[in-house]
Image 1 (tube, one colour):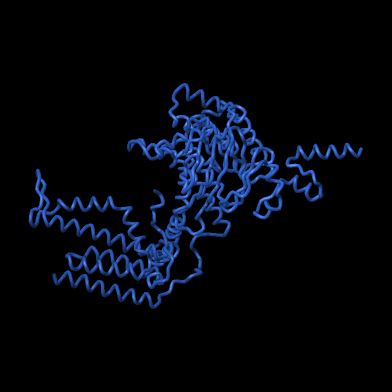
Image 2 (cartoon, rainbow over the protein chains, first blue to last red):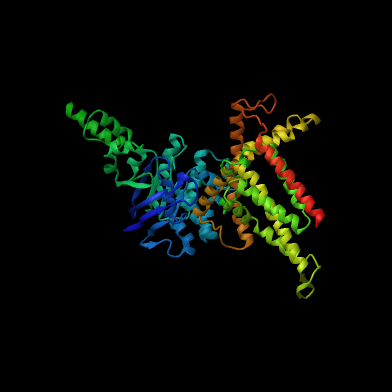
Length: 280
Length: 269
C-alpha cells in the first residue's frame, strides 16, 4: 500500500535571489509502506527542499503530497498533525537541542502531540530503549554529551513522536566511522521496532547500496532516476555525469572489467569467494 | 516573517548616491534627520518631503523597497498618529465623546508627526540601501577617528569591527533561525497559534539553540581571525582608501540648499 505519494510537485522560491528559483520541478514518486528509500543528488539538487514537503514544512507551489491517499494540505489548519506522522530529522539535528535535560528534550515532540504524564514517560523510555539512550543520561544536560551522543538524542527526539514515515537529511554528516555506524544502527532498530517507512538523503553511495530498497536520483531539481538500488547503480556513467558515483566496491569491479558487479562489500566477498573456490 | 527584516541590506545599483563617500553620506543623513525635526510648519515639511523623494529617485533603489521598510514599523506609525490626534486642542472640534475631543489641530498634528517618521525611515534607508555594510563601518570608523586623540586608541577600531561583524552576521543568523524553527516545527512545535504567553514560551526552543550556535560561531570566527594574524587596528592599512569625489560635492551643495530652504520656510511662514 502506498503510504506516501508525491504528485507533480514543483516548488518555486518566491525570493528574488536568481539561483534559487524552481528548487523542485515536477517530481512524482510513490513510497510503499515499510520501504527504505534513498535520495541522492549533488549539492543543491533540491533534495532538502523536496523532503521538507513531505511533512508540510513547505507547501508545494504546484502538485500534491498524499499521505495514506489523503492530500496533506486538504485542511491547512491541520497541517501540524502530519508532522507526527511523517518525522523529519534535519541535517545536524543536534543544533536543535534546547532543554535542560536529555529526557525533557526527547519528550518535546510527544508533548507537542498532547501526550502527558505517564503516557509521555513511557513513550520516551521506550524510544530511549530502541535508540540506545541509557537511563543514566536522562538527567544530564544534552550540551554535556559528545557529538555522537547528541545526535543520538536529537534523533530520538523525532522518533519519540512515533512517526510512521521518518525522513533523514544526511543523518551521518560530520560523524566519525563509529558514529556513522551507530546512526545506521539506530535507524535499523527503529524500523525493526515500528515497521516504519524510512527515507534517507545521503552522499554515501555505500550506505545507500547497503540500506535502500529504492533510490531516487535528483538532478537540478528534477527526478533523474527512480528504481531499485541495483537498477540505479547499474547506470554508473549517467550517475557520474551528474556528479555522483556508484559504491567503491562497484567501481573496483567495474575497473577490473568484471560483469558481475556487486553493490556492497558483503556481496563482493561472496563473488570473490566463489571465484577463488572455482579456481582452487 | 523573518524575511521582512531588511535592515542593513544593500541594493546594488549605479547612482550618484551610491558613489558618495560613506562619511559624507552619514553626515548628510544626520543633517537631514535634524532638519526634518527642525521643520516647524507645513511648508518646510512639504519642502523636506520633496527633497527626500528627490533623493529616493536619484538613488535608483526601487520605491517598493522603501515601502517594505515602512511595513515593518506601521504599528509605531499608527500609534504615534493616534496619540497625537488627541494631543492638541486647537482648531475646530470635529468629534467629541466623553472627555476626549478630536480637533482639526489634532488631525494636522497627527499627519505632521506620521509624515516626519516616514521621512526619517526613508532617508535612513537610503543610507543602508546605497552603502555596503563594509563601507558604512569604514565611514563610521573614519568619522570617529578623532577619539583616538583622547586616549581611545584602539576603541574606535574595535567598535567599527564589532559593527562590521554584527552587520555581516544578520543574514546568517536569520538563516540559522529559520533552520531551527523548521527543526522544531518538525517536532510539532506550534509557533503560529496560541495566546501571547504561549507564543513567547514557544520561542524558547528557538532562542536557546540560536544563542548557543552564535557563541559557537563567535569562537570559530575569533579563531579564524587569529589564524589570519588579526591583532586589532594597530598598524593596519586599508585596501580601499576613502576619498572625496565630485558626487560628494554635489551632495554637499544639495544639503546646503536643503538647509537654507527649511530654515527659510520656517522663518517666512
